[in-house]
Length: 611
Image (cartoon, rainbow, N blue to C red):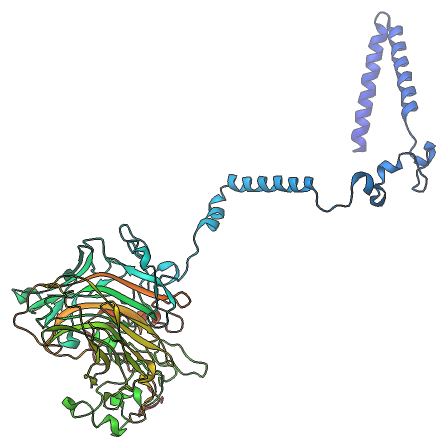
């Protein structure tokens, strides 16, 4: 670099010399040289005048901080001195708020400009999804479907009258809120699998009651503002699975469930109020069993039990023994006086650890007993030339002689000139124990009478202690039984049976059967219409076709106890159903072990125990 500088300097000097030489040879060259020297002298004198020495101490001005100068107050603010003149020291001021507001507006504008408005706005404007009034979060049901009905949304039908959005409890007087309704006002709805978010009509023979009809989804539709289930005679049985009649069964299984509350339906019964043979029913069943699918029901229906004792074992007897005595004597007179033919509770409180069980499990490692209880809104029949309904609940394990504790403090019959309710003398048999009341119906509300609709239903509180079921007939109270009526039975050596704590579903059926062997707690809803030799008298003058019509269905629950999911945390069903889905979808599988080829969960009280 030094060499380069030297070359540059020499070259510059040479150029300057050359220039001066040329100028000196020009005319007047001496005068030009004098002008250059004069300018050089002027520049030197200006630089000397305005330049400062390198050391500030030679400038003649005191620069230390201790020496005060006249303008020091301008450069050294003092809050104590200035607070009276400039109002210093305030944390908040009007100007500050204005500045902050402007910055906020600018920031929000920037967010909008950058297209972040969608997530920001939707966060504040989108309704929060809840379980209230729905199966699960946001109203999605247990099969993952979301209601998509023409002109309708959600679990509460938009056609439901405003005055029906709340209702007072028949039993407690507290106000309950509507959590589900279907007004069936849209004509032409169909109920084949996948057609409807709440209901499904099955396609099967209901062998559990040896029905004379085939359940066909085409027999169920909506017309004239009502759900209609039609039963008719078939001219050519070969076109109807070799059966002479076809009818319909509609279920809300695994779509809409409820636990506790008031369940009501406005119904016009089929046929005549004086000609017997039809078996219309509206009933509910625990979601862990599916009506018509025998493998799912074996060892589940009609249990409602959470005690580990002999009540969970086959026939309610100890292994290899004929005891307790009440289990082998004074039972069903048509079956050798034994008490029970049930195979035992499949998902009991005695289930061994590690066995297949939907849970939940208690802190001590034992399971909660699970099952598929049944509560019927109505089963209609004709008796002595008049319409009558049985309103009942079905139970297992059984009391000795099927005698529940029907003392006056365990049930109540309400005086009503129409119902005239009495306790049903039928108490059960080897497949079920029944707690039932018989009531006369409104004789005008039949298809071939005046054709009016009337309200049936039941209200229930799940559990033990103060739990109850109260039935409604013709819009009025009919009767109530309390859980204490199914308390411990020392003769049968069984514990108390709770009012269903399971999620329940609706079933609506119209059927005809030759033998009344009903293999039916989340509850779900069933409606069916059939014909029965065993349930009432089959009259040769029976008219076909006949139609049961349902104007509306509504479910109410206390606002602080809304439970409308099919998979509640304390009584789960989803994972178990998914694990054994074929049992719930293949109607040809009638038994759990023989047909479905699944092992029966080990029971601590069995002969093998948990080994």
